[in-house]
Length: 233
Image (tube, rainbow, N blue to C red; front, side, top):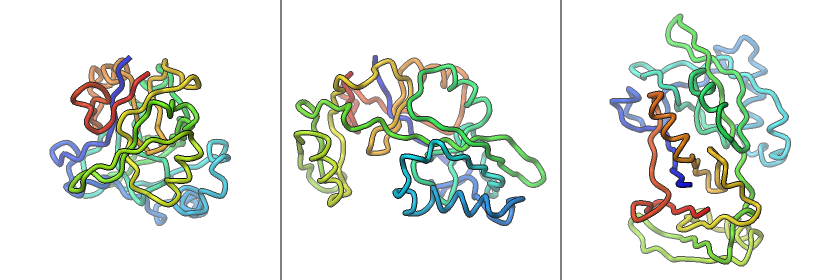
């Protein structure tokens, strides 16, 4: 199975705005119950998140108002602000219905409303808990620091704990070639690695493209083109 990195589109022709960050803004003033906004931001938009990260998926949130920015195009995978931890986008009902047909890891969906003037559209806030680092074969996997305008320094770790200790002091760890271990389910169609990269299977990528769902693009996580990440399962 080949996998692809799925990222939000930044093309102004597709998303309507050139900020590359968000198409809609979650505004407390639009919430019928402002305490729902406060709860959302406290639990997913602040460092309090790390105090109860293991309980997040059992919580219930309601994004009652996300205002589409002027000129923004309403896509199926919608970028928003303020940023919420491990919540890469809002998704349309069409995107939700398609995703539910596949094998997904750690995905939670909470109701959201996107507003454009007086119009209201049903969306869902997507939350992804990453697959555990213990599912990585550290004997084979290679990581790196640097890149972009700096030389890459390639690294290996003996296990997940050694990697976590490194990341706690160094935030710019990149993933070069990652080999799945015995604990990884290679039949997954969507999952997130601990570096926040969202991976999809070729069959899910093809289904998203066939359905012409908008707002995301795909980078190969394999072969010579996989300069961002190579995943071996």
